[in-house]
Image 1 (tube, protein in one colour):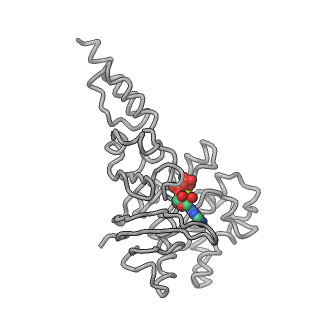
Image 2: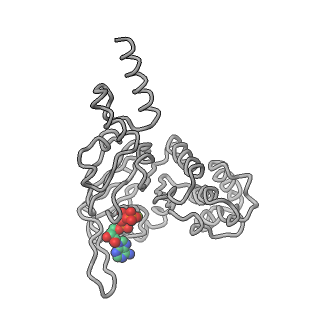
Image 3: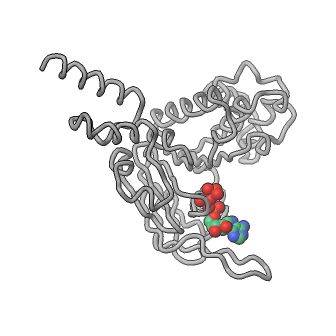
Length: 282
Ligand SMILES: Nc1ncnc2c1ncn2[C@@H]1O[C@H](COP(=O)(O)OP(=O)(O)OP(=O)(O)O)[C@@H](O)[C@H]1O
Ligand SMILES: [Mg+2]
């Protein structure tokens, strides 16, 4: 059984007094437990709408979303689904609910009725996983945005989720904050969590095992990052490959042996050094 199964999902917003807005159309999707999936697409392509269906913040207009075997339409499964799928949003400050870090992280498990004697262990473990245990007594609003985002992730981890859904969780962070959050996502993935990351950064998306590109509410591409970023369809979806992939593609006419599927600066540098060595030997 897939961890997430989405059958023919349609979502249409109906703002009062305005025309309905179709946001998702006929989405069929399966995500296995433990996968690391990036969701990309132009503004308005439906990424946030899709992400919010995964923990029942939104319900389908038609079709079904199943999380770990529970239908998100089933009110009796809501608690289980919300505990299984944690959401991390763009703005770290908006996710903070308490005036002391450890109280903020304890908020979710307290609501899930985690027994009092287990609470401090749960909070400690969550804060240690994001490297913020040292800040447990500090007011979150005095921390940097990157540190606040790590506290937000700890708050989600404290609820013991099997899956983390991040909606542009790094977009307000500086390079150091971004790197910290991405490393935490890598660690959580290696520890077995399912990771879904909505992002406008193709370099970030390239870290995932699978990239899904949305276009006008439909899945346009779905596959390994190297395959998706080598697709000629990308520009028509309003997307560019990661900078290293694009540079590699531009250099291929001069070095045809360069792979079209280079994703990172390190991979490109290694491939160019190999080309230069081969030329020197020729
Ligand atoms: N609450 C809402 N009411 C009405 N229309 C909405 C609402 N939220 C989103 N939409 C519309 O639904 C479509 C999909 O929006 P969504 O926010 O899912 O896109 P997105 O891919 O996350 O975009 P972005 O990259 O800008 O975050 C867009 O046309 C958007 O205008
Ligand atoms: Mg969005």
